[in-house]
Length: 533
Ligand code: CFM
Ligand code: HCA
Image (cartoon, rainbow, N blue to C red; front, side, top):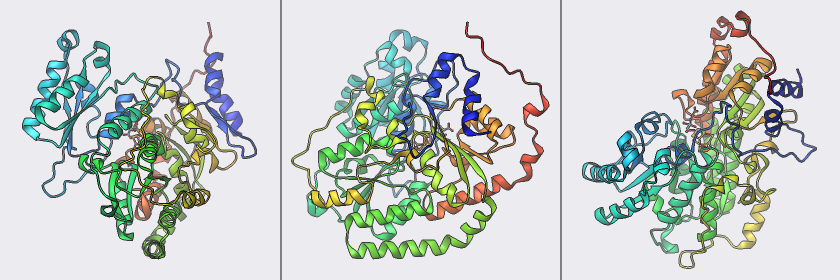
């Protein structure tokens, strides 16, 4: 069946209004056309989406991985408890530093708090956290009911700051804000930028030459550790990693670096942009997933700094790392060649993993984001992203001013301009550009579409998350979680690529799938059009 026919079949069962809506979220890559896709809009009520909420994006994704802070979730117990430890953002304790990553802190609001207000309980939770744990700082994240009943978490935080002499940050990230977890990224970015980053002043001399921040890297399955290992080996100084295995103390220093490299554009582009405006540090879009992309990234970074010594060292490390993996990588590649994949992940991995899959001989035939914006699909030198950023509807955007005292340019504007022509400095190509013609692109893929497409196309592997993993496996199609890595990882960098290749080849080649009969082969299935009236 052609892709066009496949997509038509998938949406054919929808009522006409829904069909019209969903059509705009789908396309088939055609490089001779300028293609647009609708993204970052509200999911149609009733449709089972894979998306999460603003609270997930703020607390779960951006601030949660900061290990030396106590993150209090203000709300009923479920939001906190059911998300406990699920994201696999690993963190190690160094020396006698504090590390609260394995804890789950919540105010556990009850009915009476919903009726009479939960501020007292929140104050009490902060007091308890300070007395028991003495953290570097505290965050408070509001879940849905807090916004609905109007608890003033900001004033509770301000009072606590005075009382305990540590920063207490309040995030109004009620789940219902915006249209997905993307809204939560934005809320977290704004507050970290306004209240934490920039707190330490340093002179130019105190800033190491090859100092970088890694933005949008959350150390899932240890990815951040593997990336840091490679960068340290070359000779880079990592000032802060945002935010996987990161700390409040490092975060305060983020502006004291000479380059920001951005792994996940979606979740952190607001901060990278603001750092450039306020402190003059440019950002470079990087990708540490896949061997070729890692090499390209390392070469771009070296060229940005421009010193021959660094360029040579980079080549040396690349050669060393390659020699360690080549043989094993090749072996797994032989076991995967000629297979096909569906790739459906949050807001950047559906893009980042296509190259790595290609390297092991797997063709991505469908890819899409849960909550990417149009710039994550279409690229952002083409589109002025602010205008299209629909999630700013409910979220006050922060526009920072240039900081005259701490603003410094590492490279001259002329050199920066030249580099921009060679590498993605301040630019992002997005997912579609690098795809093969004929690939299906689907935004906010839902459960009906997942089932129908898997059935029609039968890819060899479906890379996505926990919510659809078992739809796929019950159909006899191997699923690889690309959020949590199914307890494996790291997948980043050279060594990570081999672990990924090993996991995929094991999953595809196990005989298990031949023992499973998909439900449509053994049960009658009623199919038809939904009556529109
Ligand atoms: Fe960025 Fe992420 Fe992703 Fe994301 Fe996420 Fe994640 Fe993801 Mo799950 S920050 S957009 S909100 S790369 S938690 S580490 S795996 S959906 S593709
Ligand atoms: C989130 C977190 C999540 C969920 C993963 C999944 C993650 O969106 O709140 O659905 O499998 O990576 O842990 O994206």
